[in-house]
Image (cartoon, rainbow, N blue to C red; front, side, top):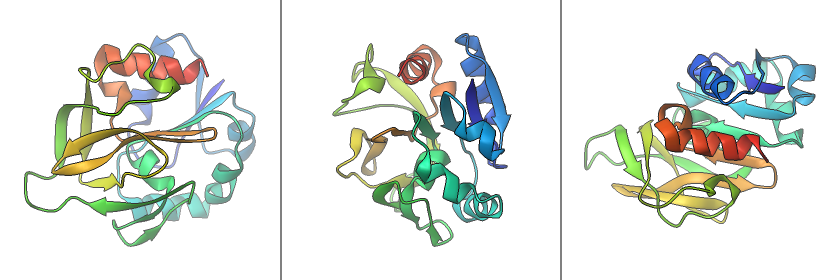
Length: 192
């Protein structure tokens, strides 16, 4: 069973539909035991960091998530919340990745919305993917580049398009909205 964490941060149904289309059973849940016992966990998100973290804290999911041992995928806001801190609402996050989430400088059109390719790709999520492939992004905040960066994207400045540390993976782009290449990323995660 693939647990999709429900923490009132939008986009859960799109992720559920994408995973089911690949032939996997899903469960949208915020229940401790269901999440802890899932084969894989997906942490999607569209929303605002401080509101999302307050909700996670109210359910004590902020204590559970860092202890999980199965493959775990944070998507968009889900990836950002796996970092130490977000400038969005000056929010202390989950601390999986030793990175800050920063707001894009207003030197170009913000948010970064639309299709973009990745550079410096590495790791198991990218089997069957090339740097020419494009993914769908929509965000005003970004994760810095650091030691856990497994691919970068350049919009105004280079940022972490994907992250990985131990069993924790993150994508700033939305694989569930990125067509065939997004399905490949999800499939690669689900095969881990």
